Length: 532
Ligand SMILES: Cc1cc2nc3c(=O)[nH]c(=O)nc-3n(C[C@H](O)[C@H](O)[C@H](O)COP(=O)(O)OP(=O)(O)OC[C@H]3O[C@@H](n4cnc5c(N)ncnc54)[C@H](O)[C@@H]3O)c2cc1C
Image (cartoon, rainbow, N blue to C red; front, side, top):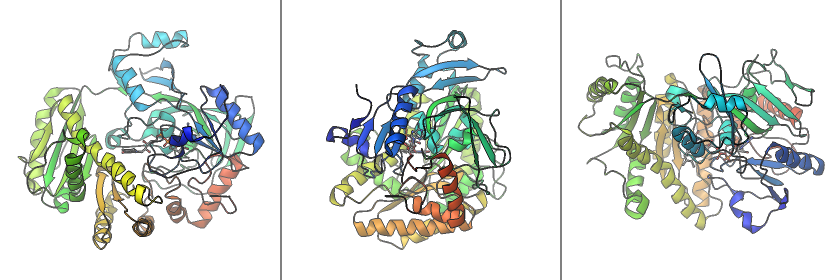
C-alpha cells in the first residue's frame, strides 16, 4: 500500500479533531512503524510539504486538524513493544504513539499483550505480572486518546490531583525530527546543560540548540516546558507536534489501587462548592477542621452544566441511564479516593459528610459509589458533560460552519482560583450566551465552555477568552492546563508569552524545524508563516 496518498473525500474524517476545527490537507499517510514514519517525514522535508501529526483526534484545540500539506495519522502505530522491570520494582512499558488509552487499559487489566516481536527480557519481565496489577494513571477522560497525543499535549484529566499529568509518567521517548533523524531520550540521562541542549541522535550525531532565556509558568500547563537543566524528554511533552514527531514512548507504570470510591455532593450555591473544594484539598484557609485524606480527583459541575445534561438525558438514548439529580440542585462536586484497603472508605466518607455539612451542604443529598460499578455511573455522568457539549457543537456547526468547541482550561494557583472563578461567573452572566462551567476544580482549572449558536456569539466567545487570558497572565497562570493552545487558542498563547517570549519560542522552533514544516499553525505566531 502506498505510504503517501492523495487526500480524497474518503479521508474527510481525518480533517478535524474533537474541537471541530476544520482543516485541509493534500496528502495523508498511515505509517505502521517508525521506519515508515521517518519515510513520510523525509518525503515532506524533500518536497517542502508541511505535516501535522494525528493521534486519536480527540484534542480540543484543533492541534491535529491539519492546516495544509500532509495529515500524518499514527493510528496504525498502536503496538505495545516491550516491558522492563527496573531496580526498585518499577515497570516501564514501551509503546507506539498511536496506541489508544483504552487499548492500554484493556491490556493491563486483562494481562492481554500481543508479545510477538517482544524480546526475551520483556517476556521474562511480564511473567510475574498479574492481571490488573499495574496501571497508567493519566486519564484525560476520553479513552480513545492516543499515548502520543497525550504526551504531545501533556494531557492531565480527572486523576492528576493525585497522580500528576502525562509528563510525570513518561520515562523515555523516541522522536523523529524534521529532517528524519531520530533522537532517543531518557529521563535523568539526557538533560540540558543550563539552557544548552544536545540531543543524542541514532545516527551517532548530536542535535544542538539553545533553550529560550525564560521558564514557562510553574503552573500546570499543556504547552512548551522550558527550564534550565531540564530533562530533554520534557521538551517534546506539550510541544503539540511542532518540534518533532514522537515515534515511541516508554511509560512508567504504577501499582493499580485496589479500591476506588467516589462521592458527588450537591450544594445550594457555587460559594458552598468553593468552600467544599478548599476543605477537601486540606487548605489552611478552608475554615473547617483539617480533612486528612488525599483525593484523587475533584470535579465541579455548575447549574448550567447539570441542566444541560438533564436536557440531553431526555433526548439521547445512551444518556437515559444517567442518574436523576436531587430536587432543587444548584451545583455539584465529584470527589474520588483511591486506596488499597476497603476499610479506608468508612472514615473517609464520615469525614467527608462532616465537611459537606460544615460548608452548607447536605450529606443526604449525595451520590455515593462504593464499588467499581457504582463508580462507573458517577464517571459516566462526569463524561456526559463534555460528550453533550460535543453533540451540541456538532448541531450548532450545521447552521454556522465557523463554530468550534470553545472550551478553556486556564490554570492559576490556589491563591487566585476563587478570584478567577468569580471573573468567569461575572463575565458570562453579563452575556446572553449559552455557557457552562465544569471540570477539574481540584487543580484550579475548571472548563468554562461557550456553546456558540451564531458567528457573532463565536467571536464574542473568543473575545471573552482573550480577556480571561490577560486576567490569568496577571495572576501568573497558564492559558491552557491540559488541552494545549493548538490552533484555537494560539492568540491566547501570544498573551501568555508576550511578543519577546514568543520570538524566543519561534527561534527554538526554527532551530528544530528551519522550514517550519511540523504542526503548522499550532501554538506559535510566526511572522510570514503561510496560514499560521
Ligand atoms: C470528551 C472529551 C473530554 C476530554 N477531557 C480531557 C481532560 O479532562 N483532560 C485532558 O487533558 N484532555 C481532555 N481531552 C482532550 C485531550 O487533549 C485529548 O484527549 C488527548 O490529550 C489528545 O490525544 P489524541 O491522541 O486524541 O491527540 P490528537 O488530538 O490527535 O493530537 C493532539 C495534538 O498532539 C499532536 N500529536 C499527536 N500525536 C503526536 C505524536 N506522536 N507526536 C507529536 N505530536 C503528536 C497533534 O499534532 C496535536 O497537536 C478531552 C477530549 C474529549 C473529546
